[in-house]
Length: 234
Image (tube, rainbow, N blue to C red; front, top):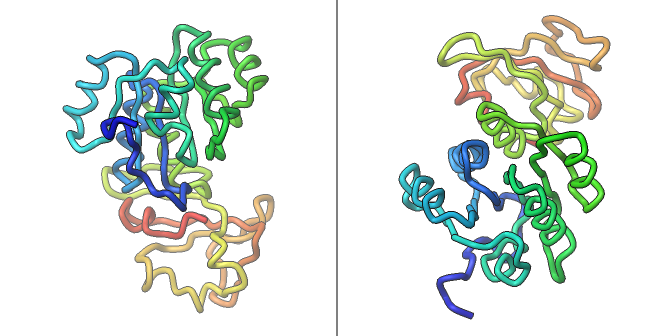
């Protein structure tokens, strides 16, 4: 195999590796958010200009000009060796459906999750039929949001307070389960404040330090973007 095509992502753990097929406005927004959080990203598009524009954003990004309807080309590029693939193509619909099918069911695929972009209800139905795990109807802002959700799957809601601070509702991370708020001391260890905690339909505002977090509970926390992003995401 030509060395140029070889994807240099992790051979063992694919959980933090992503391929984005189609790097227009939506796809490039997904790439940017993933890269901002240090993820391994493989960008693919059949248009050289789109790839060149993406490289202007980040010259170090792994980016390939590939026909996304060609199974062998996608395999050679490494698109079947990542944990999550975002099929961000909008048109033609047939290309997005074919790419989704290839990365989901291609021989030897290691892809665990496929998220595809749809332009209509019928398009969504067809994408789900060929194996898409999630379908989105995007805008540029949603591309950023999708990238954030991929990196932080326990993030449910975010309320931006200003350019630096936010309030977030998150699922209790697995490493927090069974521990009290006193033990975790999130203000000291993560520089965030706990505003509420508990089951989704029965949150306790300003919970006591003795409150022990359970797996099915939520946390509402406030802090800087950097501090909130440092919280465990699983």
